[in-house]
Image (cartoon, rainbow, N blue to C red; front, side, top):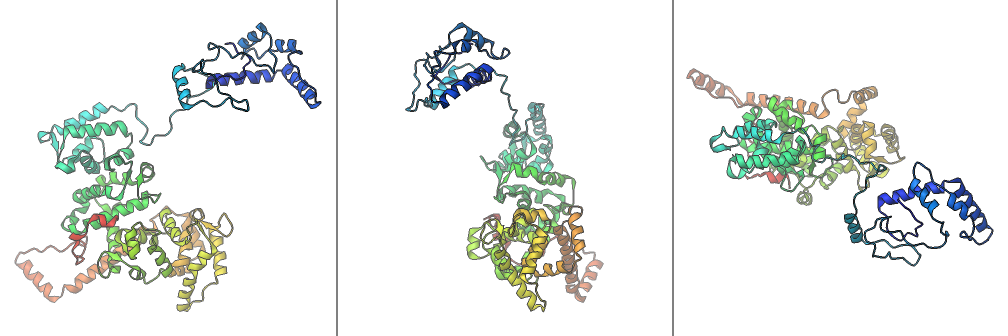
Length: 583
């Protein structure tokens, strides 16, 4: 390759430019080159004129580059005379430095610099040039797989043949929702993927799925989705969406209610299907949707344990063992607490209703913040100052377990009055004032705010002085004590009566036992069971006892209502629809 002195008449390709830069650096590092440049620099400082064309030509001709890198350039320097450094030379030929077009002259600006070519010209150059391999650049392997890493050993045709074999056993090669369990296993999916598979293939519209439609759907899914998370999202999401919204889970959850053996008792109480489904969906978003967007992405689903819990539904007959999402006992506790507050039973509660929770332990200022919309999404309910059941699920779990990341974020949003992402001393004092009033009414002398503030700063140890951030509260592992100090009087007093060392031990053993929410739900469930039993014994008076004995003597059987069948709420639940929870 011949390289001549160039006044930069044409655009260099990236590979060639890299090589030219390398040759130039080699030339610049030569001792003779540095000597000449120093001499020129001295003349410039002394105000003398330069005439490089009349001197040192012999030295310029004799200068060589590193033999290992630029032997071709060495021959070009010895074959020709060195042109004067200040005089222009003719541009190199097309055979020396390839360019997109040799006929188009380069436009030069007023400062002597060549102007940038248009994008279209560059594209034409790239198309006409042959790719040049270079050892200086390394190919970076693909590292981002939003739909999972492809499996090179996956035999799609083999999987499809298994599906076709299962369909051949059905009448007319059509599968109903009852048959989809076998189809799901043939697809190597967990059992309770059957409803998403059925709906994705169009079965919800016709009541059945033909083998051709299902195979076409499943083949496309296998070709585009390469892990369980992306497949599940693809099956449940709306067309064109790569995320899941709350209503997307309704068909999946309805199938769980209809077919899981641990929820068989709920079939006769169809009025409460929507209540249980709403509770589970809210718990899914509470634990999985860490971005608070109302849209679960594949990334969020991968970081959660939801799909593992879905797989356990097939193995675990008792849904109460799946405490993270599907526990019916947890639903029972949440709904009963909501029912106690909803005095008019219109499935909505206002500020006065919520204030009665836990004997008015939560401050009125905090209740106002909850209804302000900072942790709710329904704008219509915010204007009406009402809270729906779905929002109450978030409130109760956050109130009873302030150690989880979602609950820490929940209460931080409420306490951050100006929304600047920082809890200032003014905001802390705003909430503490009401705590002091409550303590005085209980004949308890409150701690001065300055002293309380010092305690909280020592507890949290914020990174920035005088400012508490969400990161500080998550890092300190004592957020539950911090929050209760400012808006829950009952729990604040409980913390004050505890041994400080026991609090430290609890923080060290966190994650090794039941969560605060699981402890609360278990205790409340036992209380509700005891109350239910006591009520039944009280209402079953002497007359009922005699009547039962007569029935038994006559050989009659009257099955006692199971506790798991929720008491009749005395309202027309048929008018309630799912979308009311997700507005």
